[in-house]
Amino acid sequence: MSQHIVITGVSRGLGRAMTETFIAAGHRVSGCARSAEAIAQLRTMHSDSHLFDVLDVRDDASVSQWCQKVLQKSGTPDRLINNAGLINAPAPLWEVPAEECQAVIDVNIHGTVNMIRHFVPPMRQQRRGIVVNFSSGWGRSTSPGVAPYCATKWAIEGLTQALAQELPDGMAAVALNPGIIHTKMLEACFGEAAADYTPLPVWAQAAVPFILEIRPQDNGRSLAVPG
Image (cartoon, rainbow, N blue to C red; front, side, top):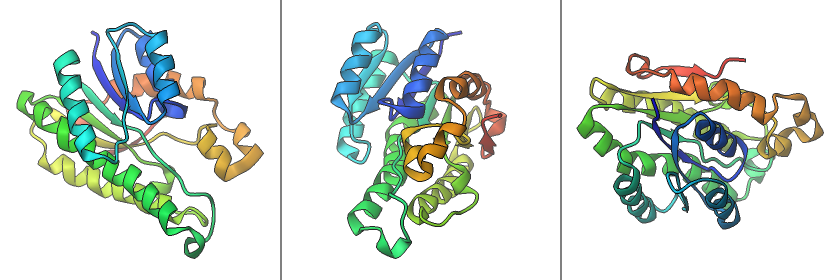
């Protein structure tokens, strides 16, 4: 059965790979990203049954407006995937510029909360839907050089568990560790060694079916994409 999937951060990396794979499997996608060029490409590539818009998830008023547009066009999401994320350039915490640290916090935490604030109420009214908040291996462990990113992903783990306690039966919120995938973000941390990790298309073929299998009984769990 076709589902309505809302995904943030669809311009590249995991978000773009999931978008293409969900659509290929027959699902409807409503996606957002900050890159106008990427959004234009997605609109050209896919039919009007999908919705793609430029959106900064840090802007709560804009998220509210976009949520209303999505609900009017495509209805309540079956799955809300909070994927949009930033990582700081690797450096000791005291050397990370304040503006860069703030941006990581604003996108990774506030962006996730903003999407939840405006999509979960209509999902609660129907007492159905799955919220998937992207965490990280660094949301369950730590590493030098990426302290701001680690802090935000640990926050996502706690935020998700608290949200899970607030949801009605029939819904679920889970934190999902996608694994280590060859993306531009990974290259920023690992350099050329990033190419040794799972390619995006291979990851998406495992991740999308896994996300579609998440059920209300998984509420509150910290999950990881197999492989």
